[in-house]
Image 1 (tube, rainbow, N blue to C red):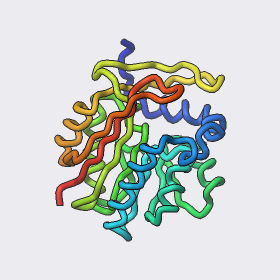
Image 2: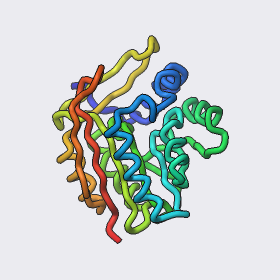
Image 3: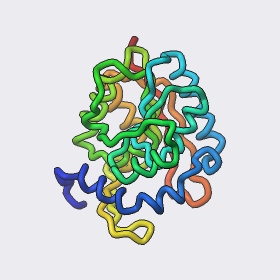
Length: 220
């Protein structure tokens, strides 16, 4: 395996900047393109998050903003955070009524205990193992007591990592970490965010790995 470099944030940022237009074209309509089960889980999360309104939800790794917009349509006060400035610019253009800003889940520019919920769909997969505790500590810091987290990620062996050097015809340098639901649940628990539900569904269509969903809650 290639060693994890200290500049993984910059590599992730540059990679998504490079593929942002093509990625947005491919994933600009999340509700229509997603399986019914996935949409149902996000809808359930939205219902839980509304209990903490007006405290907002942060969509971490918001990409083109389609999931952020879907939560907004479900009456959730929400904003998007993404590491890629180009992704953020495209999301703002597509959804001018919503707020998006550049940031990293390992160092959120947010006050303590201000969020009613955190949604992170397929964004924690780019965080190396030794940085994952820091990210989840940030989740705990910015969540209000009782606030919920919904994670989605491709499931795989704990020591399994893929390096991508090309996507959508662009040269990139992007690491993806495939983890089991148990591994992620343990990491959340250590950060003070207790898992409440786990769903593991089989791959559909062109998907190559099972999809895992974890719903967790910071203790009240």
